[in-house]
Length: 139
Image (cartoon, rainbow, N blue to C red; front, side, top):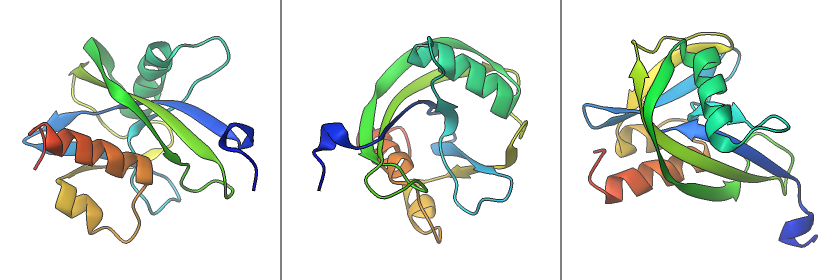
């Protein structure tokens, strides 16, 4: 088995948007699993720049008061075996009400238990749920 450093790595930025103690997740058209809103960093972008671009594309809103929640590393769900996810997660206030835009078909607001009960869960999202739950931010 290749060393961890030899495995493919996907670098992403994600938004941890909490309302009424529930965390926002998005489902892309044609997909069955809900993920964190956000996406892959493009060449030359840092994580915060990617976050702003991805959230405009996926949720149709800008962001203000952006703060980093943490960096989460796990397996990259839906990618070839051995692919790793490096997700920098942020909290922020949206400028306007988020709505499904671009490739996003549906928004969902979940507690930890509600997300864990889904037929499929993304490991990166689950790490963020658990972290925010440990901080008392989501139920």
